[in-house]
Image (tube, rainbow, N blue to C red):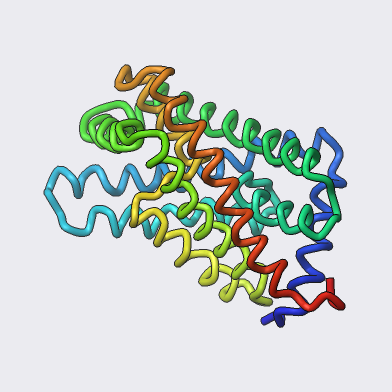
Length: 254
């Protein structure tokens, strides 16, 4: 595995690579990143719904165990994920490799592209094919969506901080490992924990909430009630981890 000092250099190199992508590449990788997260979430919903109907005590554990597949697909294929970028580019901004305006532009752009990919998957696979619409699956989506839009905006914000602290930690641990198994394990458990706790992840919610909206369960206003504070909280959570690494770094190595 990489040492702490090696990780400082790797993070800076990753920042430079990401901000240097041409727009066409960012658009493609951003949309695909949203699709990947949504596929992991869709698998979780399809596994959870029958267990919910049986009142199984392992419903949440099963869903949480499947969700990280999306992040693993993103990392291994080089796709873009906004919540990971909130952390990685945040480290770059703290390290003066990019300005803060550029940071927020990059993060917002990838968030919207991830969201587009997630909404497309929610409509085509979820609504049109009925994978999140019919029978127990529609009920599962409705229950999960209502749990996301019911809390107050401050509660969603703080929940989102926890989500991206763990997602960013998964991204970091995945980068620390030098082999495929180490990367998978490093990413799997922090992401599984955030899902198991029920924290708010803006890109995951870009799939769940439109799926519920297409089913007629929630409104656009309710979607925004969640997505805006979730975005802000995720950003803050990613920056917290970036700052913790920045202020403990060896100034000679990054």
